[in-house]
Image (cartoon, rainbow, N blue to C red; front, side, top):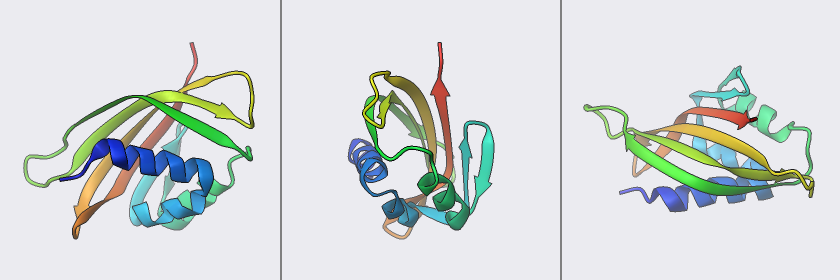
Length: 120
């Protein structure tokens, strides 16, 4: 069984430290929607994530909710809300991110990933 808290820690620690390490989580069928912009495939997703216009980022997960995504496969929907700091800035940004995890071998890959900053 997947430990979702550990998986989220791994994702955000890797994102914050060395984004290139996230490539193993995506496949060519994976889709990322980043602030309403859809991106498909591992190479395109990694190009987007590595090309983000900040040098340093720190995520803080506030909530993590999950539920089965299908009655026929062991896929999981995960919703994360949290805060992030960019480039040692003083303004904390709120975000939400949804992952659709699909089983593959002994693990999971990210089939869908939707990220959105929350202003308000």
